Length: 358
Image 1 (tube, rainbow, N blue to C red):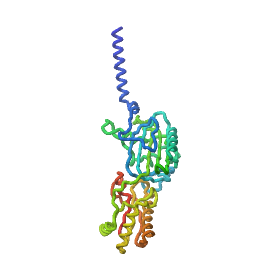
Image 2 (image 1 turned 30 degrees about the vertical axis):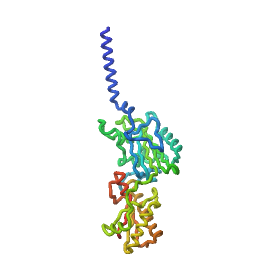
Image 3 (image 1 turned 90 degrees about the vertical axis):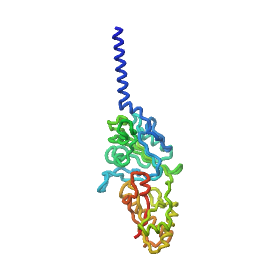
Image 4 (image 1 turned 60 degrees about the horizontal axis):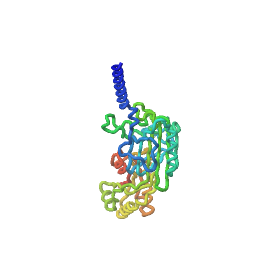
């Protein structure tokens, strides 16, 4: 009996040890042991939902983001996505994107209600809200088609050298996600203008147990901040040289309010140099061409670049007396990039005004 007990105890210990080892390697237990992506942190504008873990993170750069402030609608364009937001709001500033894995057992409705309350305390006012099919298309389409498209997904988790395919859990966090709910809100006044969107859905990608069945939270935040203006104002002499050869000059000192054609006051020095150059050579006629990066809808970018070019022409003719016949505005939108649009620095170079000799 004693030997049998000892053998039984040994077998039990082996079984328990094997079970423990199996559980330690199971995706479910790994899901409970997730930690924040290295170097990530919550933005000051809004704290995280209790028990949530950051599995995707990008922050710090001056950038642009297009917020959907209307439901998806069928696109009439010959190429591109089939569904596009019926109304958008573009904002520029310090951009932060986070993807959180929320605690199991919480519904997207509960999570989005908590965010709504917290954002109200921080001075945000809702601009657009929708749930499921109300957001346009099918449940989850607004994430796949507008917010978390293939071109702008994060790929933080799993990290490299983890023994698993790096980045895929973050990349596919919203694949097939259900019960999607969106809140877009704006803050005005102190401590500065900000736009935020919060999208919450239940993870449904069963291959990734870390997120399956959990609420997944996508936060996109733009906070007003001055651009790091390292590009020197081009003076009249330099403009004359570039217009002579190769026939055009790119200007980065002409800045606009977000999503508007209003020229910012800090653009005055560059505008004055253009006027000086034109007065020095009365024979010169110019195309004033607006350029954007490729973020957002094609038609919108084309129209915005045209309107901004027209605003520069109006500034030169009304304030500096340049003859209207010497200037013609044009919008090139995203059609003439000078740098890759895949990076923040590249997009900043593509957002410009160019003078082109007629």
